[in-house]
Image (cartoon, rainbow over all chains, first blue to last red; front, side):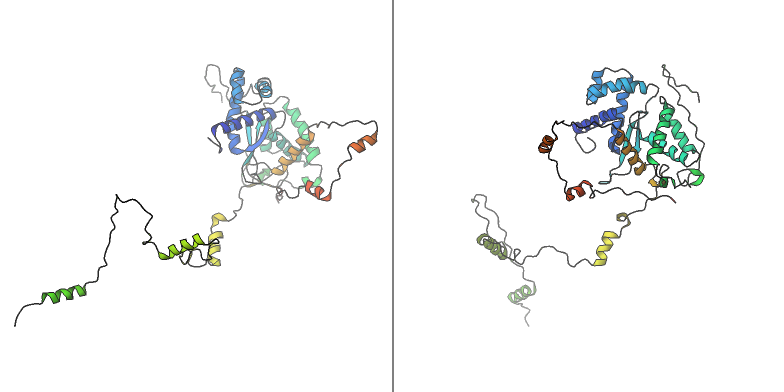
Length: 212
Length: 179
């Protein structure tokens, strides 16, 4: 009994959200709903990765003719190297009408509509057009987005070219240069050299490798 | 001299000094008696009159309360006091946003830990436009006159044209550029 409705109603709503997320790979909802569907979707993907019987998954999902083949044929091979964390939540401004906090919820490394990839591509395109070196924070974000993706670099370059053509054709849009301290986008924080360290991989006999 | 006292006289005097105590009647209900309509003696005569008037008259009388007053504020709340109550407390006033950043993709202000709505809108619009749309089914006519007669077309009035623009919708304003 959450989100202001009965148990059955809430459950049906979460199933709807989960199935539409699997189908479209990106949805916009409120924050509370997104947090609840996140758990459901992650659970479904782990079930698919462990080769659960499809009849067990049927109870948690709508439109099984579309979603279940996608879970087993597309998402399972995509997330083979990941141990959890298949979804991402990005905060948006509150809704205009009732000021409800909105979020974009999307599958990681998706091929259809990934806002984080496009947003970082837009930043990179802008910096390249202004002949400014890419700052460490954006470089870190780019590396994080691409290191687990197939043909990541090529796809990213394609999107950057599209962004240059679509969003910065007007020279007025490039007038504003970054004037923050150390060229970061926050006003007060100092810059740090970021480095990506992969997580230690779990072994089959349930012992975690202690390599740092 | 005699010390005899007129007791009778004293008693009269004492009683005269004491305050008169009103007589008290307590009605003990008779259980065996059959219950009749409530006795009307104890009611205020004004209420009885009001009830009679309401029953008789088709239109209710002008003074409904008939001189019986209810609780009401004693004085009008002054302009100053009302404004102090409604707009004084800081909780009810608009507060300034302190969590602002510069959007790295467009250079305008945005809230920290959120995406810039202008850039998100641009990207989403590009996505929606780049989806290939199916062309609507269109009948082919040998004689173009037939098409003209069957589908004469609809004229759009100027009011409808303005409605289609959706100017009444509240749009999110764009933030200012960071200096």
